[in-house]
Image (cartoon, rainbow, N blue to C red; front, side):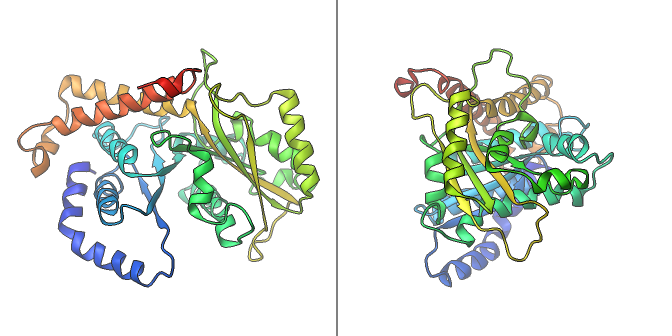
Length: 347
């Protein structure tokens, strides 16, 4: 469960891994990018995942690298003692090597499973059902193409106005595994869905309360599935705008983009309309602040560093850790700057 060990194993296995990747790339008609699923806290997903991200950026500099990155559950004591180191080292690569990161926060996923789905002790399978729903719906416009958002760049470009601010959070409604709500779900309208997507309780990222009330949306894309009349969408957007349900950045357009998509013919739905929100919101920085705080506590005491010194990358010094901290700290500062009207002049 050590980032350095996973990274080293990635180096040893790179030939075999990239033989597979190159073969798949060669067989692709129009390769647009890569999607990587991994955890940031363990050893393999964080360390080997980081190595693969770096090599993908080198091998395919013009291709998109998108990740679905699982952040650790902060409500539980981790059995991975070096988790803060692993997380920070991975966040550095996610910042510099990925074009788009969809954050899957285990803290929020477990909260949703217990509060919204009334599951006392959610299993991995139940949590993974939530994750697979997010992954499935977020790519639905690629798999059932329409005239917009039908490729990877078309999907993520409107969400990411500047290169560094590429960490996205998601919200989904209605949660179909909640059998108690089936009757209500069937009556769900487009306005219901779009309004619920803006409620914190439906967000798959646990950012904590915004005490200073300064965090804002940078961009929003709602993917609406089911029986939808486009005029309903327009009316719903008007209502949301009139009621000021979403606060946006002062330096860019305040718009909620909507993509309409077909429901999968292979999945039985108990509701007429469902929606996924992909949002770029400045409060995501609270996850990075949490990672920095946990890292600083361990680093100050020099705890568990012997596990890293055993690996080639850290034999001579620990500068990689401190450089990673600087990168993540700079990311937090940029998200904070993005809440202000003079962000475009920020350096």
